[in-house]
Structure formats: C-alpha cells, structure tokens
Image (cartoon, rainbow, N blue to C red):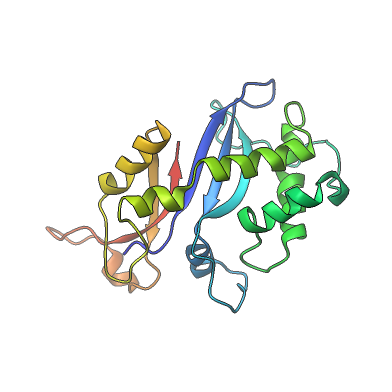
Length: 201
C-alpha cells in the first residue's frame, strides 16, 4: 500500500568538503504516520514539501553535519522568501516553521557555506521545489495516494525519470498498518506491499 513518498533529488556541486546536494522532499501524511513526534491535528498537506538540502559525499556514507558556519538569522531571509518557504518548506510535524528552518540550516546548511550562504541555501531549495514538482509529476501519471491502490517499482520510477532525466532509486519501509507477522516473507508468497519512503537520484 503506497500512502506516502519522500524524494531525494541530488544536484552535483563539487567542493572540498562535499560532492553533491541531496534535495529531499517529503510527503506530509507519510511523515506523520511514521513520526514519533506529535503531528499537527489538522489534515496533513497533500503536496510534497521540502525536508532539506543536504551536502553529501560519494566516498563517505555519513554526510557532513553541524559544520562551523554562520548562525541562522531570520533577517537573512527576505519577507518574500519567507512567504514562499511557508508553502514549500513548512514544519509538517510541529508547525514551527522557523525552528524547522533553523534546524536544517544548523545541521546541513552550515556545511554548504563554501557554495551557498543562508539566503542562497533557502532560495535555491525553494526554486528546486518549484521546478521539480514531484506532486504533479506523479499526478500526471495517475499516481496519487490511495487506500487500496498499489504501484510497482517501475510504475513510479518511469514518470520521475522522464521528467527529471535521472533514474531514481526507490527505498521502501514496511506498512505500519499491516501486522508484523504478515510483513514476514513466506515461501512462495507474493511480496507484501510497502510504503514508498525515499527516492534517491
């Protein structure tokens, strides 16, 4: 059962401390269904939103984090950009957008300082979100969250590959709605449906 998505779009930007950025989009209903934190009581947003822009390295599985860099300052974000980020990069779990942005900048953004300052970091993220509209890409392929409809690996990969010119890697997790016993593989049984959790480019 495919109820949610989280997308990693990687854009190569070579520097001394990292090789590329992982641009991470999340599906709010899935974020909430798997979250240990209390999500907002209202119905989660039904569009993909930004989780973060993460500097990463090909040679190291652990991405750089909490680097020495400038502290987050709201004044570095123009009122116009802040308004955009409230749509593209909201805190879907606790509703504290400013705290969410500060946390992502402190953990990941500080490591991108060689390439992007704070304004550029958030502005670039918002621009990529608007130019890579995963919600629309899948919707145009008739792939939308559904309580009973499921899709194969290739069903999801194909429209994303066509639209982004990149072949994604899908990562899935067990559906928390299914009993644990039913999630265990049985001899000669059909594979159990899982939640689409990540797509990595």
